[in-house]
Length: 292
Length: 323
Image 1: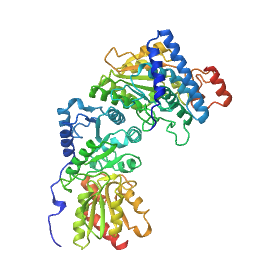
Image 2: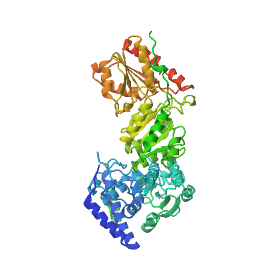
Image 3: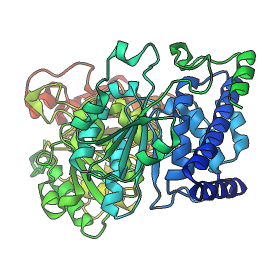
């Protein structure tokens, strides 16, 4: 099991305090810097490992940045704290984005990121809670995170703790039936402490979602399952922050985060082949420049 | 032939009742205990639990994948979830959730497979759970516990609460007699010796333990001394007891209400087959011989697949004779 990097936790804490005391514009600017930093880290990790899912990593980066830097009530120095907010990355193939975010918060040392997918590294291609603090459940096969999030939200309520549960799913993942089973339960139990975030980048591994097994009208479908739906620009920090405000309906909240797969790098954006393509050294250089 | 009161004539019980009573009793003093089910409040004998703890009975409806995921989430939140469903659907429909959310994630969920084996009889192979051992033995980090009677069922639940860990608990519906010391507690990873013997060993699990004891009575009439090991734990496997049986008796018979492809017998064979040459013994593996069951009630099907005491005894005698 990796352990917290306390000096890094302190850096993260002061960054968080700065965010909390900033106005909307300054806050967005700070979050953007942080997200671009994460994207550079992702490119470097994937380029070095020769493996990864860069497109989905980039579409989810802003969501993760806002959650971990601003929204979640969790302590990287005490990752098992009973009443913590819980975060589950159901689209576990975007592990590089999660690892980079966790390391920046100090859940473990940033230097560990160089071992991404290397032999015997705790940083597997999909996250493992047994080895990585800040990971709540092992994901990878799609359609697993949301049922676990429903259980965790129900558990927090039964135990009378204040913790909320945030789960991020890929949009293609919404084709899995288990998610709709879980949405029915979330709504039935009125889990207003649950936030279901869909990274709506409109691409899945092989093609556009709407050309594969169409999800639209996704907002209406989620609403018809009883969720309070908030459809936003998933790269707009102010909108993301607002989307994580408490439920106003007593129902679980669905945040449909409209995003661009590959966001931030011109030749990767909205291109199906960059689901898990690995950048060449020249492309890596160009990507790092565009992200700086 | 001497006639004694045999295990075959003893009164029999449905283990689900002991399961329900013990869970309810423990839940009164341990608020972490919750039950999760799939519209199986009745068939999992959870009616009393629901009436006493309505908030702690989570019925997700007919949605087994979600049920197991929810169980993992409840464990993550610090509760001790007993996830109860008919064994074929719990293990078959949600196998990937059992793998990823419970075993690989090491969430401390107690998966309670109700009415396993061929308990559903005439309802057929869709409702039989005879593949569960084969499927679940392939998952590292998941205990497989098969109580053979009511007392062991209660002990298994007490252990699960005292030391929660990812577990598959097979709770029989097919009525069985008491075969264990009611005051004894189960020890993780250990078989229970149900009868001492020196010629042959029968390793039986669940419903087959009383049948193995019956077989031992038949064999005693033939002057064959039979050791009966009750395989309460299939994972972790009691390798020491198996090695001792291989060393001290001349053959091992396994008996399980499951397909032989990857169950108890396969586990024993895998271990014994890798012992050094002089430590190995002949084996016979009794169970469903890789075929779906025909129509019939549970009793009929157990006999059909040669899982009654008389056929177990025949297999033991044959193994001793032919090696």
